[in-house]
Image (cartoon, rainbow, N blue to C red; front, top):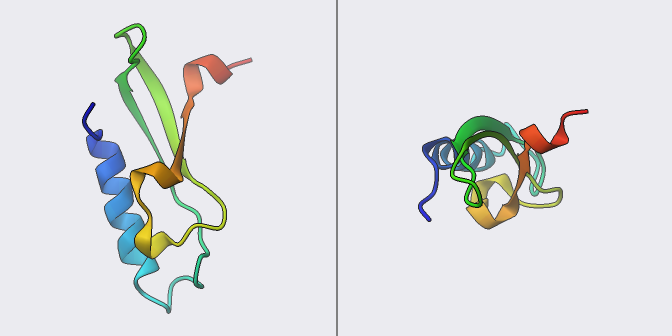
Length: 76
């Protein structure tokens, strides 16, 4: 499965922000992005929110450091 464009863009923004010490403290800062991708189980489009995990460094953030929340299943 390839990395969704919205995730690639989030990682690029996060790494750029994290590389500049004037903008963030080491291992600090939070970033997130929302997008629509195909659910791997159903193939149907679903809205997902990717959130950077706590304690991770923005400057070196990789896809594995993001939590993916399926917003369709989180609705009350």
